[in-house]
Length: 208
Ligand code: APR
Image 1 (cartoon, rainbow, N blue to C red):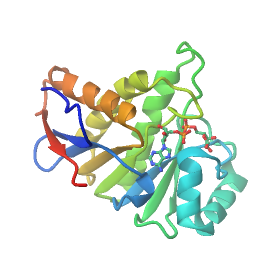
Image 2 (image 1 turned 180 degrees about the vertical axis):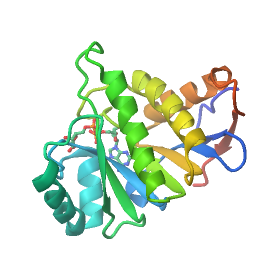
Image 3 (image 1 turned 90 degrees about the horizontal axis):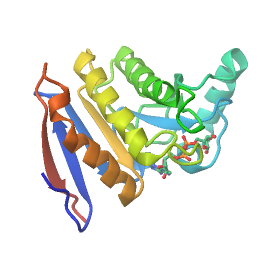
Image 4 (image 1 turned 45 degrees about the vertical axis):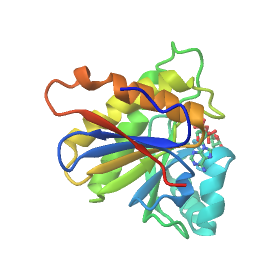
């Protein structure tokens, strides 16, 4: 299956009804999934990138909640996540996950990144949520190469979704086209990796 050369598209990975992973391009602050994930820092402070965008769009409520969590358990170690409500955002919750800083790949970055996705999905599932959206954690300020990050994120999401009790829909909301292309390419390569459950991809065109 080939990716479209022009325009925005999304890739749906069908893991057997009703489980679906969607890979699309967009601004995660507009997402109406039950939870969105923030690429946070260990101090849970409003930074730049997607973190800054989420804090700006949510208003001050989540910064207050983050401050209270930080008083109890700061710094939050890379690979871990905590949930707050979502302030003015369309979602119900923001799950703040601290990704690894890329240091060349030999310092457990892949395991830490996988843990971010797993723990975020575990928290969402324990909250009884049906849907959630992720940005490409660590691929901005933290410098994780996008293709390598996609190769960690997609299989981790697929396995965690197959094991979830409540979650049925996980969306990767990617900010730029090269990141979308990298994550989509990994998703299309994966079918043989999951012999124990169904894995089928379809490609759709975004409405402009
Ligand atoms: N929606 C979706 N994705 C976004 C958005 C948005 N509104 N804004 C940025 N991104 C993308 C970036 O293009 C990148 O692909 O999110 C990805 C992650 O980039 P960063 O936000 O820089 O996150 P990360 O690399 O994990 O670095 C985290 O940055 O701002 C600080 O507080 C944050 O210290 C932490 C660090």
